Amino acid sequence: MRYYQFARPKDPFNWVLKLSASAGSKLCFVDDARRAATPYVVDCHDLAREQIGDRNFERQFCKRRSWCESHCPDNHEIEPIRDHRGCLTGRRFRFACAGDATLFKTFFG
Image (tube, rainbow, N blue to C red; front, side, top):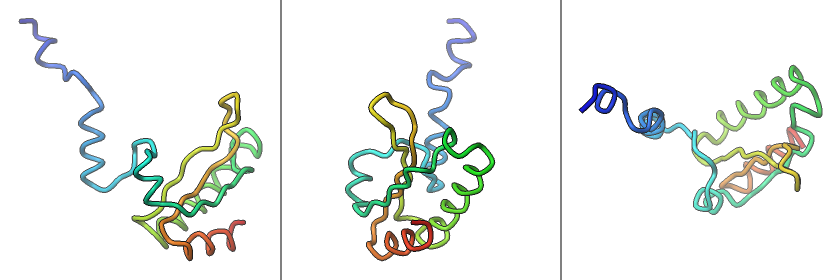
Protein backbone atom coordinates (compact mmCIF):
# COMPACT_ATOMS: atom_id res chain seq x y z
CA MET A 1 0.00 0.00 0.00
CA ARG A 2 1.30 3.43 -0.93
CA TYR A 3 1.39 6.39 1.44
CA TYR A 4 -1.01 8.51 -0.64
CA GLN A 5 -3.62 5.72 -0.57
CA PHE A 6 -4.19 5.98 3.16
CA ALA A 7 -2.93 9.48 3.97
CA ARG A 8 -5.26 11.35 1.63
CA PRO A 9 -9.02 11.09 2.15
CA LYS A 10 -11.09 9.81 -0.76
CA ASP A 11 -13.42 12.80 -0.69
CA PRO A 12 -11.40 15.79 0.52
CA PHE A 13 -14.40 18.09 1.09
CA ASN A 14 -16.74 15.55 2.65
CA TRP A 15 -15.53 16.38 6.14
CA VAL A 16 -16.22 20.07 5.52
CA LEU A 17 -19.83 19.33 4.58
CA LYS A 18 -20.31 17.06 7.60
CA LEU A 19 -18.80 19.62 9.96
CA SER A 20 -20.86 22.47 8.54
CA ALA A 21 -24.06 20.39 8.64
CA SER A 22 -23.45 19.59 12.30
CA ALA A 23 -22.99 23.31 12.97
CA GLY A 24 -26.26 24.09 11.19
CA SER A 25 -24.81 25.61 8.03
CA LYS A 26 -26.58 25.33 4.67
CA LEU A 27 -23.80 24.67 2.17
CA CYS A 28 -25.54 22.06 0.05
CA PHE A 29 -27.91 22.56 -2.86
CA VAL A 30 -31.57 23.16 -2.10
CA ASP A 31 -33.26 19.81 -2.67
CA ASP A 32 -36.94 18.88 -2.94
CA ALA A 33 -37.30 18.27 0.80
CA ARG A 34 -35.95 21.71 1.64
CA ARG A 35 -38.18 23.25 -1.04
CA ALA A 36 -41.21 21.51 0.49
CA ALA A 37 -40.29 22.88 3.91
CA THR A 38 -40.13 26.45 2.52
CA PRO A 39 -43.15 26.85 0.21
CA TYR A 40 -43.46 30.67 0.28
CA VAL A 41 -41.33 32.17 -2.49
CA VAL A 42 -40.14 35.70 -3.21
CA ASP A 43 -38.25 36.07 -6.48
CA CYS A 44 -35.70 38.85 -6.90
CA HIS A 45 -35.09 38.80 -10.66
CA ASP A 46 -32.84 41.84 -10.62
CA LEU A 47 -30.43 40.46 -8.00
CA ALA A 48 -27.63 39.20 -10.25
CA ARG A 49 -24.02 40.30 -10.32
CA GLU A 50 -23.97 40.57 -14.11
CA GLN A 51 -26.96 42.93 -14.18
CA ILE A 52 -26.20 45.36 -11.35
CA GLY A 53 -22.43 45.12 -10.89
CA ASP A 54 -20.24 43.62 -8.19
CA ARG A 55 -20.40 46.29 -5.51
CA ASN A 56 -24.14 46.88 -5.77
CA PHE A 57 -24.84 43.13 -5.85
CA GLU A 58 -22.74 42.46 -2.73
CA ARG A 59 -24.41 45.29 -0.83
CA GLN A 60 -27.96 44.25 -1.73
CA PHE A 61 -27.41 40.51 -1.34
CA CYS A 62 -25.70 40.88 2.05
CA LYS A 63 -28.50 43.15 3.27
CA ARG A 64 -31.17 40.63 2.26
CA ARG A 65 -29.25 37.63 3.57
CA SER A 66 -28.61 39.27 6.95
CA TRP A 67 -32.29 40.20 7.19
CA CYS A 68 -33.21 36.56 6.61
CA GLU A 69 -30.67 35.33 9.17
CA SER A 70 -31.86 37.76 11.83
CA HIS A 71 -35.63 37.34 11.30
CA CYS A 72 -35.92 33.65 10.35
CA PRO A 73 -32.59 31.87 10.88
CA ASP A 74 -33.70 28.25 10.47
CA ASN A 75 -36.59 28.38 8.06
CA HIS A 76 -35.41 30.12 4.91
CA GLU A 77 -33.48 29.15 1.79
CA ILE A 78 -31.75 31.16 -0.92
CA GLU A 79 -31.31 29.66 -4.35
CA PRO A 80 -30.27 31.02 -7.75
CA ILE A 81 -32.67 31.69 -10.61
CA ARG A 82 -31.36 30.71 -14.04
CA ASP A 83 -32.72 31.28 -17.53
CA HIS A 84 -33.13 28.65 -20.25
CA ARG A 85 -29.41 28.92 -21.14
CA GLY A 86 -28.27 28.40 -17.55
CA CYS A 87 -27.23 32.02 -16.98
CA LEU A 88 -27.81 33.42 -13.51
CA THR A 89 -30.57 36.05 -13.58
CA GLY A 90 -31.53 36.52 -9.93
CA ARG A 91 -32.15 34.92 -6.55
CA ARG A 92 -35.14 33.11 -5.09
CA PHE A 93 -35.78 33.52 -1.37
CA ARG A 94 -37.89 30.74 0.15
CA PHE A 95 -39.59 30.93 3.55
CA ALA A 96 -41.45 28.49 5.77
CA CYS A 97 -43.79 31.18 7.10
CA ALA A 98 -46.05 33.33 4.91
CA GLY A 99 -45.57 36.27 7.28
CA ASP A 100 -41.79 36.19 6.83
CA ALA A 101 -42.19 36.14 3.04
CA THR A 102 -44.61 39.07 3.18
CA LEU A 103 -42.30 41.12 5.38
CA PHE A 104 -39.35 40.34 3.14
CA LYS A 105 -41.30 41.43 0.08
CA THR A 106 -42.41 44.59 1.87
CA PHE A 107 -38.82 45.57 2.71
CA PHE A 108 -37.11 44.44 -0.48
CA GLY A 109 -39.90 43.95 -3.03
